[in-house]
Amino acid sequence: MRPTQIAAVLAAEFTAAAAGTHTPVMLWGPPGAGKSQIVAQLAEQAQVPLVDVRLAQMEPTDLRGIPFRDGANVVWSVPALLPDAVRHGPRGILFLDEITSAVPTVTAAAYQLILDRRLGEYRVPPAWAIFAAGNRHGDRGVTYQMPAPLANRFAHYELEPELDDWVAWAHASGIDARLVAFLRFRPDLLFQFDPARYAAAFPSPRSWEYASRALAKFGHAPELVGEALTACVGAAAGSACRAYLEHLEAMPDVAAIASGNGGEVPRGLELQYAVAAALVRHIGRLPAARQDDAVSHALEYARRFPQRELGVMLVTDLQRVLGRPLYGLRAFAEWAQDVSDLISFERA
Image (cartoon, rainbow, N blue to C red):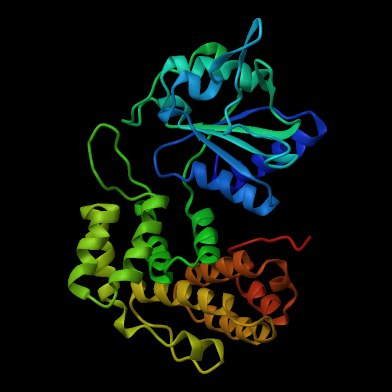
């Protein structure tokens, strides 16, 4: 499933926890695909605490607690890391990350926690959702076969990286617009992972975020940029990205385009991808009072692209940033009429 679909599933399951109809969810996916980040974003959007338990780093007693004598009885202490309605709040997310990398004795301790929402005398607060994540068994990570009794305690979803979802996230998260343009130009490099071949660095949604940070840190030192990109996304993707960036010196002024003073669309295909991504980023950062005029100029500019599909891509990304208000602009209606043979859309 694509990331936006996974996010919708988790949001529904989080809401269902308060109604008592929640089913624990297991997220499968390759390394770097963004499993943990989707869960963290849900907690941030819902403004609830996230208790992130890395099971691969734990011993059974870390989860089960330590027994101690209480008079004539032996009782178990409750680990402070587990959700508590008083300390953490009545609603939240318990996230069991790296569950497939945990040793069997630890996953055995999680059986009761996941199915019965309890461990001995401890109980997970009623409105807390339980999610887990792990790499697939063929992903060259340290993984254990999930026991059938544990697997049967989850609803299972597999996450696959998807460029359009990543682009929407990238614009909202401040990822360098040049990288957005590059991956629009080379969508095959968003994620490349071969479990049969070892590579310390490889392109993934997570490593492209690191590449964006590298450009921010080393952009003033061109001699370091290439090595920094390679360190983040691997030699092949890093080299291709560096070559792409070196061709962007002739990119038009996107601020001028947004103000209606833009020139012609550049001839080079790589520059066309770059100006489209940079224009979307520029408009997304404008004050709301200035966006309508800027969007109208961008829509007019989109109609000039020699390859009409690139204009469609530009407007599609604008919609992801601005939302449905885009549909109410007169310039959008005119643009949509021009490309009606290429796309369809719904206003509702």
